[in-house]
Length: 304
Ligand SMILES: Nc1ncnc2c1ncn2[C@@H]1O[C@H](COP(=O)(O)OP(=O)(O)OP(=O)(O)O)[C@@H](O)[C@H]1O
Ligand SMILES: [Mg+2]
Image (cartoon, rainbow, N blue to C red; front, side, top):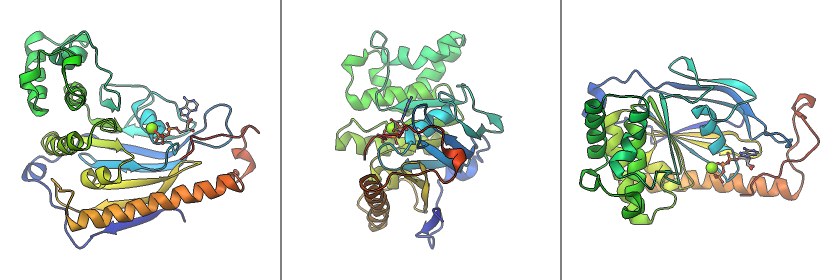
C-alpha cells in the first residue's frame, strides 16, 4: 500500500479561530476521484489515480519532487488541463472548464503592468460587468485584506515582489471564488517577505474561510500553513502520504512541533527523490498492465 495516513500530534485537538467556529463554511468542497493524466508522447502518466477531497475551508498543501504532477493537478482542478480518467467536482459541479468559483495564483504574478494595483484587482469584476459602486467596495475590501490600501494607485513596477504577490492574491480573492488554487505563489520571494506573507495568508484564510489547495517545494511553508499535507510520488504522480497537521493557527516557525513535522515531511520527500533516482538509474517505471501502455515512447520527466 502506497497510501499511509499519519495523524501526527493527534493528541492535540485542532484549534480553530473563533471566526472559524462561528461561520460554518459550506462552500468549497473540492472532490477529486481517480484522476489520471498522461501527456501525449509519453508512456508514464503524470498523475495516476489521485483521490483527494478538500473540505470547505480546509487548507491543503501538496508537496513532492519536481515533475511529480503538482501543477498539473492544480491545472486540472482549475479546468485548464483535461484529465484522461477520473472526476473533479467543486460543490457537486464538474470543473471541466475554468469558472469563477476557482481562482489561481501563480509564482509569476501575471499582473497587467499598465494598470495600478487597484485597477488590476478590479479588472475581473469590471470584465464581469459589475456595477461601479459594488466593484469599488469589493476592491477596497480586498486591498484592506492584503494590507495594500496605501499603495492602491501604484503601477506594478513600483511595487516590491511581495506587494505584487499580494495584489495577485487580492485579484483572486475579489472574485469571491469557492476555492483558491495557489501554485508556489511565494517561491520567488526572499525569506523575510515569505515569512510575512505566510502570516498574512494565514490571517486572510482565517477571515475568508476559503478552501485553499496550495503547491510548494518548501516543507517549512507546507507545515506552517497546512491543515493537511499531501506528499506525492513521482513518475507517475500518486499520493504517497497524507499528513494531518493538528496545530492551531497562526503558527510560528520556531516551535518544537513545527520542526518535528518539518523533519518528518522532509524525510518523506527525500526518500521519494532517492527512490525515483534509483528507478531512473536502473529500470524506469513500467505500467502495471497492458492497458497502461499508450505508446512505446518513454517519458523523460523533469528530473528531481
Ligand atoms: N502541457 C504539457 N505537455 C506535456 N508535458 C507536460 C505538460 N505539462 C507538464 N508536463 C509534464 O508533466 C510532468 C509534471 O509536470 P508538472 O509541471 O505538473 O510538475 P510539478 O510537480 O509541478 O513540477 P515542479 O515542482 O517542477 O513545478 C513533467 O514531466 C512535465 O514535463
Ligand atoms: Mg509546478
